[in-house]
Image 1 (cartoon, rainbow, N blue to C red):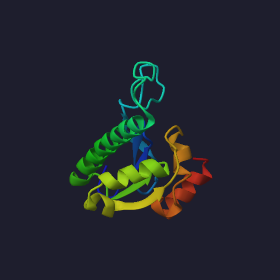
Image 2 (cartoon, rainbow, N blue to C red):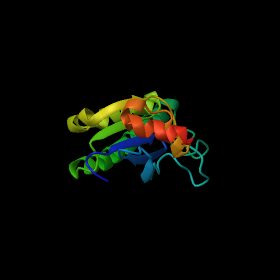
Image 3 (cartoon, one colour):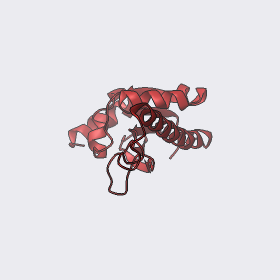
Image 4 (cartoon, helix red, strand yellow):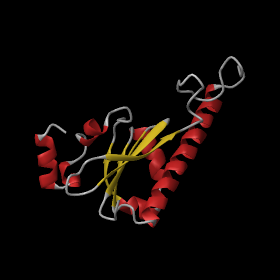
Length: 156
């Protein structure tokens, strides 16, 4: 990976995948994945805090605060990974793909240099899609004209 590459963060409140793409082919290569341990129960289901049966006294405001706290912690963890990559010159441009609510949490946690490296945002949850499908949601201008056309011609 080089400073000419683009990193693409595909995230939601529970999972995130980080891809890198470099000219001229623009292929997406997954370089890291993240799981928010606060949002996944042992059975794999999304949670918003302690099980309700164990904590009947916890009201919806408390659950909302707890969920926000977990989301903020996860967004900071992602920011730290992006910041390390920026400092190490592993990418030049950054694309954020996330549902609007989580995208807002990411915005709050990003430093100015990270915000300045963001060249595009996609307000959708694409975390479960394969790389080739994620790629199809990116603006063509990001992946380098001829390389994109060549890959699309081959069905990628």
